[in-house]
Length: 317
Image (cartoon, rainbow, N blue to C red; front, top):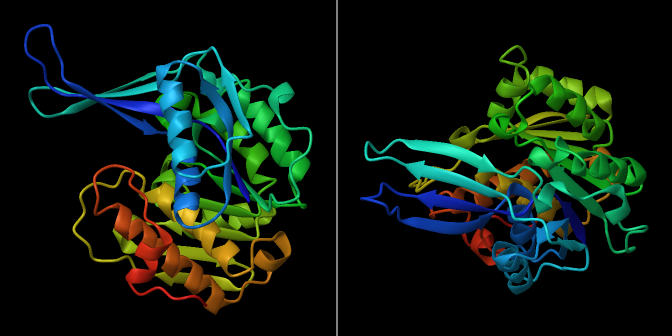
């Protein structure tokens, strides 16, 4: 089992309106929420740890996790409201963004809400996005990561959201808590540009994270592919040439598929990840890149199944 820790929210897509009305569409989302569903679709047992409201949106989120086969024993249900991320498109076609999450369910998790002990089946925990940096949930998750480091794989995807975090100096302090516990860090080249204001390149950021103790750093570059950095050296794979619908959920797909492949090949442990050779790294990247390539051909965060990834030519290594 992989325990996915973080936020579940809803995205509200609002179109240009007429008069007093604005057409809208609600979609379940949140980066960790997507990762949990992605793992389940790839045949990996997953559980979700996060604050989920008892309001209508929270019920939608909890029901969807259940339908996808994600274990619900670690959901923390609360009367606090669900975070809503609003994307409004004006008559000129340009989107505007607003975020309604202050005091919401996903931020309200406290150390008292953490499981006192994890099931033996949990091999890995994932953390990512803004719930690493907002309080009280950020400190609660950091305490959990610190408690479980070394015993289980800790995988971190910063998935930076500057409009939510605000103070980037505060983000650095908060994220450092997780980086120091991480076995795996998966980041995009955009995350690195934002985090260091363009002052560090991919290799420099990877060297920094490896120096903090990570055993594997993977940097994604959209359609250009991905690069892994570890004790075995640097390995890159190209992206797939596909007809892109949108890139929503691509990074979450890559993260889920990376961990899924480690599990499928019997390498989901700190010790096994530390000794991955170049061939194994190339296989991991190829599988995750293939999964992400499928997602971008579909509208929204519609992550692929294991059968779909296998169908485009990825085989076990």
